[in-house]
Amino acid sequence: MNKKDKLILILLGIGLLMFITVYFIIIPKQRENRDNYLLEQLNSTTHDINYILKYKNKYMGNASNIINLYYHLPLADVNKDFEILSNKLTLIVNYKDTVSNIGDEKVKSSLIYNGVASFALIDNLNKIVYNFTGVTYNVVRKDIEKHFGDLENITDKKIWNKKVRNMLHDKDYVFNTFDKLFFKQ
Image 1 (cartoon, rainbow, N blue to C red):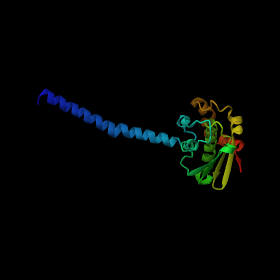
Image 2: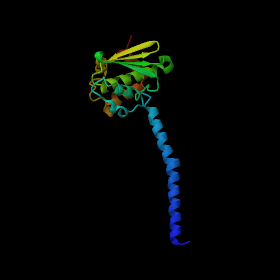
Image 3: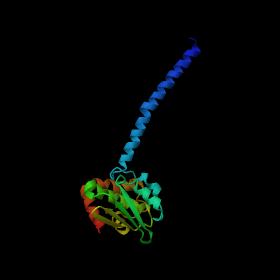
Image 4: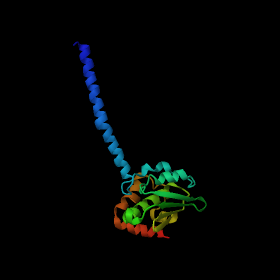
């Protein structure tokens, strides 16, 4: 075998080794990381605010924008439909499950997160009604702003994590804040 044939075999071996590394190690690891990231988006304590910033909009009348926002927020895995009352600046989210099936703390933590995110990203949204089988919760912009302050800059990742996400790790905070901001209908 001459030098040229040896070089071709060596390059072929290196190429095959690189293919195997990419196909069986790197790509599966990237998929696993992506899947883990997507799972984290279902939980209010691990959700990444940057994941939803593209849904910022001045007007709540953009139905596809609001629907996409809610399919990228915690509780996205719960079956739901929406009603948009543009004339009342109200969003109604109808969850097709009970709070007890989902978990009381998970629901309350998620609704705090989702409520703040919705009001911060949809400029003219004034009220959200969350319907679950057997119970309805309402939240209004003025109460969220009173508790969290100005919503204009709250979606900055550092501010968001400090004021919203990190606070949701504390069960007492979740229940007290929920009772303060949300009212049953």
